[in-house]
Length: 486
Image (tube, rainbow, N blue to C red; front, side):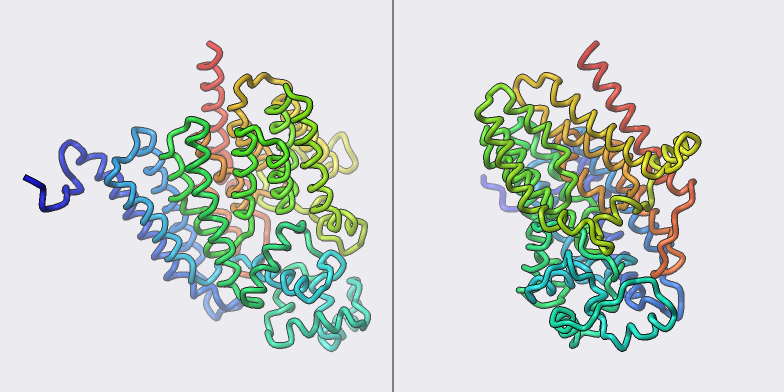
């Protein structure tokens, strides 16, 4: 007789497994609702009462701790088919809850929107920093105070930039680092422009662009994991990651634009399509420059075929030059955001200050020496992966993950949203230490005495954010190496 009622969720011998999934789902949803409820308190940059930073941090950190239940459940076995639809809906619900929330403690999205408006106006964001759009009457007090910052002279370009923000008091007055030009290559600028074409200077339009990249990343993960013989269930580490959802849908960071391009490059390399793989990887370089570091790993896939290797190299090099050219051409300008970021930027770094301190006794410029040493270490690791054998070409994603982790932990900037780079690749090698970042990185926000300051985090907080995850990752990699080479 045909069953008239659906199978109960907690049926048969699945009681304990279902209870674990239910606990994870409830914890993630509760944290998302709490963060959404707290977010309006962060709308005013100078509120009468201090915003609830601690409560928010604990909610997001608690979501990350709950997320480790997801990792544990997936480690045990794949979720039953009857739960897959519910888990997909859970990830969608987390996104829908976060989408309309007020951004908390971060404002990079204002610069994205401003630069998109500048490009739409036919101006060059690498030549014109946001300060060029400030009304000269606003700048007059700065001159009287003897500001060293170069003030824009009246010109048709500055008049057009002033006109961009004429109808919105937030622009460019509230754009961060207004005297620095853009640090984002052309792929990113294209996304900024697309958001402005949807609705000028509109955060919801920008979040819609990010949502498209996010969903495309998840769908590509499902496809490419299967192509590499990895269980598709691990894509849930991406889909249910609360830190990733927060960084995309609340504070609207642009790093997820890397997802479809980077995964597309990996999938195309696996399909032995060197020209398209090179073009896709170059597209990722056009979002953030760092994926260029992965080029040797892709070259390894095509190393046995000189023709394919040449095609990959030429496609990658040519398109990368096009996408980076305008940014690099402006790097010598005193207002260059790229030059400032490359030379001096340091925020929430764990290992980099230790390296800098160690070099301080041997070098008159330990900052430059530490950056050079980190760069050399990353290039050396990429070179090792280039020469190490990979007969089937199936080690590319895991090697890319390891190199990206090395970049993240060694970098002079360890923003939580940079972990998006790692989370995109994490399903290919689901190490527990990487998941722990979702629980520890939210405590970065405790460095904010208020919503306007950017003070450096104390050493104990940095150790908490990075220390335990790094140690666990190192132990897991050593164990996997010993297992592969007993």
